Amino acid sequence: MRKHTSDLQTATRLTHAGRKGKSHHGPVNPPLVRASTMLFPDCAALKEANGTRRSYGRHATETTLALEEALCAAEGAAACMLTSSGLSAITTTLLALLNPGDHLLMVDTVYDPTRQFCDGLLKQHGIRTTYYDPLIGAGIAALIEPETRVVFVESPGSLTFEVQDIPAIAAAAHAADAVVVSDSTWATPIGWASFKLGVDVSIHAATKYIVGHSDALMGAILTNEALHQRIRDTYRQLGMSVGGDDAALALRGLRTMAARLAVHRDSAQQIARWLQQQPEVAEILYPPLEGTAGHALWKRDFRPEYACGLMGVVFRQDIVESQVAALIDRTQLFGIGFSWGGYESLILPTRPANYRTVKAESWQSPMLRLHVGLEAVPDLIADLRAGFSAMRELHYEEPVSIAD
Ligand SMILES: *Cc1c(COP(=O)(O)O)cnc(C)c1O
Image 1 (cartoon, protein in one colour):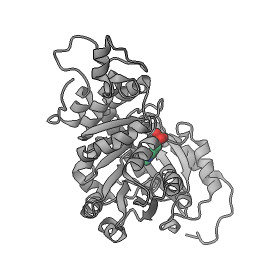
Image 2 (image 1 turned 45 degrees about the horizontal axis):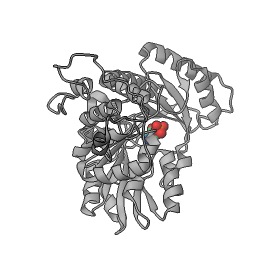
Image 3 (image 1 turned 90 degrees about the horizontal axis):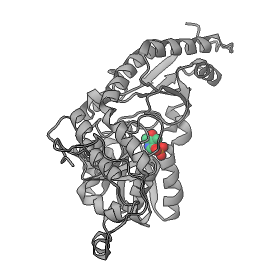
């Protein structure tokens, strides 16, 4: 296999990492290996392989090793562990790094199933969680307790897209001997230099842009060298593993991810600007767009060429839920569904206040989440225009106050 190719630019690395070098004579791609049992020619070979990752299909195959190598090269990680879903990558990491009696600082804008894990299994096992304001920055220091072992970040945050000051949070965490674990799904492995910003473990729902085609679930734990063995021990004890077919799909997705993200970003910028002009829209939550909340921090810490296509739309307070439903139902090109990161556009009504314990009151207006896919922008705008017409047609009691 080609070595980490860290001197090459991102798009080049994504197409070459985890593949054999120029002298290779054979297929472009690593083989798709479906394997449980590995065979050994004799007892000596068995003895040599025993305890290594080459001993059993759950630990590694040529396919999963190629994907791990490519993901490490993409983000500059020391090691990669693949799991069955993004959520299991998060739960495995937290179980590895937290013991009974420990304390976890969790961002309030975290993906809700992660919150359920903290309030469920972690709590049952005597691990306390405190949720913090995503905009806390260096103020995180005041929340760190002697038992705090992990500070968890997710930036931009789920549904509301707040950008966190990761270097400030990491400095405070490291000063207290805590580690920084990041759900980096929005950024993808190429959207920011996570490890340089102070992240110790970067987790991805590979389900989103890495697989990129809505046809497989997968998680990836990318770690620095210091935490690698500790997380791998837990990973192995929990029996985490991915199948060869899914690994091959993720590897295929990764090859085109840089090119796809450039299109998602351009289209999302255009759609966001169009949405800002609609009178029903109060705010667009898309940090890559100039003038939106979080843009300055985003510009400082993220790579502008690879922004993703996920954004929030906040409506005026007088817009009612049935109007938002009418908009959603009228569109034809925006599928209604959870998840995101595939080639297709998606639309979803959201209620962030239902999932927050810090500043929940900030989010009272009806909201949408949009995933801008790879369709042509004029078609997407025409579709949204039809949606807004449906919203406007809907008969409702006009509040007296909007006389202007
Ligand atoms: C989708 C998602 C996950 C979970 O990924 P799955 O593969 O669906 O388990 C975790 N974090 C974020 C931010 C997500 O969007």
